[in-house]
Length: 121
Image (cartoon, rainbow, N blue to C red):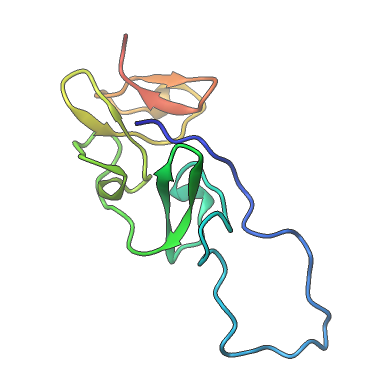
């Protein structure tokens, strides 16, 4: 499974300086699709990137996975990045990258168009 979606947890509008703050106000990124994401890097610290389906990928409250890039995974919630991809031998946690040198040995190639570590074809 490959997750594609992009950024922005805010519409950029700021509340007026003297606007009251409600203690019951919903937290940022609570509603599905409120904060689209590609990986956990795009989400606030208390949320994780979740793929409901290929067109609904968003930050949602919850614990992030802890497996580092290159480790085995069965789904997005296993990975620190929320990127679980097909490896040569099994599913592996990936991560965002710009060059091959940033990628683990198990996923040695940085796919330039997507910016994620991937297996060698």
